[in-house]
Structure formats: C-alpha cells, structure tokens
Length: 475
Image 1 (cartoon, helix red, strand yellow):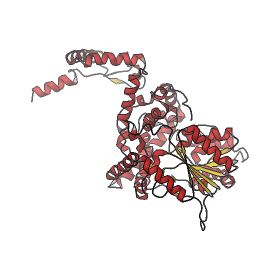
Image 2 (cartoon, rainbow, N blue to C red):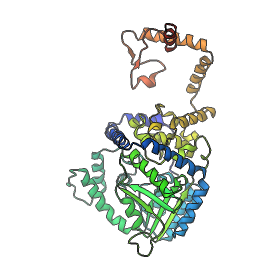
Image 3 (cartoon, rainbow, N blue to C red):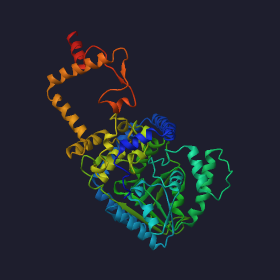
Image 4 (cartoon, rainbow, N blue to C red):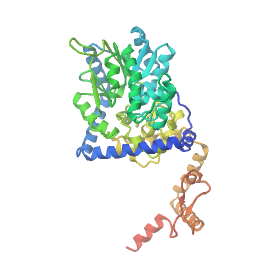
C-alpha cells in the first residue's frame, strides 16, 4: 500500500498556499469543472431523479454485495476469464506479479487507475524487474517525474502548460531541443509518438474498472483519450483491477450510473470512450486479449459495509466533490497526503488506513455542504466527516489545545444563562475594540483565521439571540 506522505495536512496546505504556480493551476482548472457540470445538469431535466436512482442502485448492490460478486465471478468464468479475490494490497500486488510472470512479461501498459495507486502496483512491478508504463497523458507525465496524482480524474491538475513542456524536454532528450510546442496538441502528439511503441510491445495491459456488471461478467472503463482501449486490447493479457464495491447488478444499472458519471465529472454527456470488456478474445473477434483476469480487492472495504461509513462505498469516482470543495480548491490534492484527496478522501482515507494516521483529513473541511449537494449518488460526506471527528475526539487523537477549548465551550453550552451572558460580554468587547475599523486583521486565539482573511467586527446591538428576542417582543 502506498504510505501516507505525512499526517500533517496543515503543513502541506501551508506549503500549497505559498506556491504561486500551484495556485495558478488550481485557479485555472477549478472554474471549468464548475461551469461544465452546471451546463450538463441544466440540459438534463431528470438529473435529480437520476441521482436518486443511482443512489438506490448502489445501495441495493451494497446490501447484496456477496451475491452480486459471486454472480459476477460465475459470468467472468463462463466467458473464459478468471477472478482473483484479494483481501488486501499485499495479496493484490502478489496476484498481479504472478500473472505477469506467467505471461513472461517485461513491459506492462497501464490505464489510469486509482486502485493501482492505492496498492502501489507500479513500485512493486519495478522492484521485480517489470516496467509499468502509464498511458493516460496526465499519469504519463507524472511518471516521468515520479509524482503521485493530485486529482482522481485529472492526475496532473496541479501542473500548468509550461510545466508539461519543461518536463517533456527533460525526459525526451532524444528529440530536438529547439522543437516548439505551439498548442496543447503538440504535447499530445509527442506523448502519442512515445507511447505508440509501448502499446505494441506490452505483454500485459492493466486497467481499472469504473463498474463491474454482475449479470454479464463485464468490466467497464471510461476515458477521453482511448488509451484504455489500447491497453486492454493489444497485449496478450488484460488485468482489470477493481475494488469490490464497483459491482452493479445489471447492464441497465450500469448505463444509469454512466449517465451520472461524465456529467458530474467533466460536464460531458458521455466520456469519449466507454468500453465494455467481457472475457477473452473469441473466434471472429478482431482484437482482444488471450487471457482476461479480474483482480477483486477488498483492502478494508468490507469493514465499512453496514457501518456509518458504508454510504461512502456508493462513490463512483467522479471527483465532483473535490471540484467544488473550497479547501481542495486552494490546497490541491497533494496536501491530503495519500491517494484520495478532497471530501471523498477525507472520509475514505481514514476508513482504509485508520483515523490515527488520517484523522487530520476530516478536519480539513468548512462543512459548507457543497460536496454533498453535487455528489451524483447523494453521499452525505459532511455527516461522515463529522463521525470521523467524533471518533478522533473519543480516542484522544485531537491536540490538547483543541480538546481543552471544546471543553471550555461545552462548559458554557451546558449552562444557557451563563452562555448568553458570556456571549453578550464577548460581543460587546469585540464591537468596542473594532469600532471605527469594522474588522480585525489580527486577534488573539484567532490567528488561524486572520492570517488569511479579516475577521468582521460585530456591530453594536447585542448577540443574535438578543436581537431575535427583541424582534419577537415587538411583533
């Protein structure tokens, strides 16, 4: 499993906020996701009803997870494929390595897959003499410089165009130094030329799976580049890596979720390529693998089923939550320290690696609720982040200053009269101190707020409760 880079979100976030190139990339990319999703949703009147359908499909599949996984396995076998059940990342890595060795593989091409990042398959293959080649454009450039993805659908979201050009020049030293990148298509053309021979030479292709269809034994991937198709059809062996919650009952269920996925992710009606793979190449097929393996990975997910975090397993990896998250929007994905960033990562990461290692992530939220409002399958992310905060507090993992501060607040909150009196005193003092300025640029015990923004000074006239009571009296 890929290790957490550090349990210190605050330190990494501060570094991200001070990085002008990162801030430029985040500002450039974020608004596009917002507007495109909004346009796609507005053009589909039944979108809200479709969200409810998607939620119910996933809930039903999770409630009968064992049945649908076993049905999926039977149908994969019936179509000439094999299914490998893996309890954790170690078993998954060993399984993939064994399949590659049986195929005498030296080179493996890969489609973009977050579960492959989760289990650390690239590093494992390299340690064992097998060269993995990322074929998604964003993943390819990150592999050149040995960086992890910062976004689950746009891996190189944190880079600007000039960063891409600089890294291509550093990596592709066999090409003319004076070549010119006039447009983005020049970058894509260079990557395509470099990757074409890799596709043709690969012995094994590894993809993820957006969905697994139980009734047909099919794995489904969506891409906008076509690299996934080349990865799974040209090599002799196709390995589909999938976590167990990706299974859905029927083809109809899958197509309903596909209608939600692209609209929520990139604002497209459908991704450019939506590819269904069912078993091995049959007589008369023009392409396809000779061997088809599905590696089913649990890695802590079965422990989430039936708990207060079980709804997280509905996630279809669209990234809408992080695209609309104000925290992710200024820190980027690397600040979260592991594979899954943003609100979905703030719930999923503690579930998979432990709240003791990732308890800082559920606190990296304003609880504005935007993530839940745009989630295509209505996952209550703020509620689950609150559950993790409660777990963290119960296990005394929160810093003592926070615990003591909450203790003081709780003392007053349990005594309404005392609470109102203290509130009146505090509001009056702040109103007096802020008189004439209207705001505070620094304030004791509020440095975390005032370092990045002003704190408005209260207006004279009492607390909210006092004003509300006065209004009720005068009605």
